[in-house]
Image (cartoon, rainbow, N blue to C red):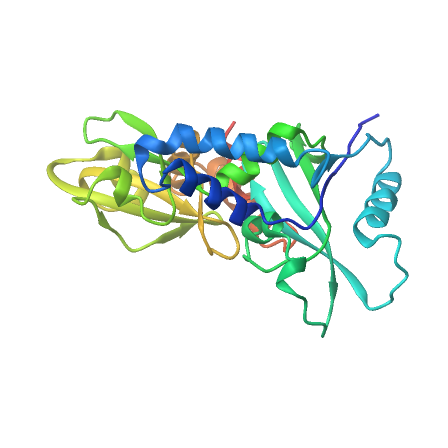
Length: 298
């Protein structure tokens, strides 16, 4: 029997608190040399919220038990019929996905003092979310979505991923390197010689490439983009569905994308894989294209 839980996050000023800490410590997000120090500050801040603003629930054996407990916590047991439940995606990768569960009062203007900054900066719509919220985790096991256990480390990673995003450097000699950047300008990490290419969409993802033109053909980059690319290419991605902010991408994901591109011109069995992916992408409930890449490329 699977066990699962949720994380309760009360209204907070995490974003303001973090930037106050960084200012006092003279740390700057855009400075690559400050990355590890800032990650440590994020970890310390989240830990300081534990058992005050953030708490991990007990484990439950059924979804109904978990949902009932969760709703009591985020509504304060209110019977106000104007409250309406909603969920938004916070983060996803090839292993798990995290969603925020919150209550809305349509037509009611909320005060900034009720803002839940952790939830607001983490959801893919960047929608302002107020009051208490819950974070739930789903994991992918044997190709299926199952309820998961949220941990303290999950919350630390969720917050960190709002500020740092993984990308992949494809070199002309065939070597690769995963590099993180902060904010919305990878050039601060990779350098000003890289020029942004028009975004491309494939298999539910929006890729943003940055090319440093050279004379040597970049085979991996050319396979990925379906056209000749010379010089180095840095590949980043936007969050699925809304494309509102940068997300994380790994070398495995890039390699799986290239594999699927080859499938589209391959055997009938390989083309059938593409058809299956496209069919699943048409399902409005699907929120994690990263898992599809893993599911069909293993």
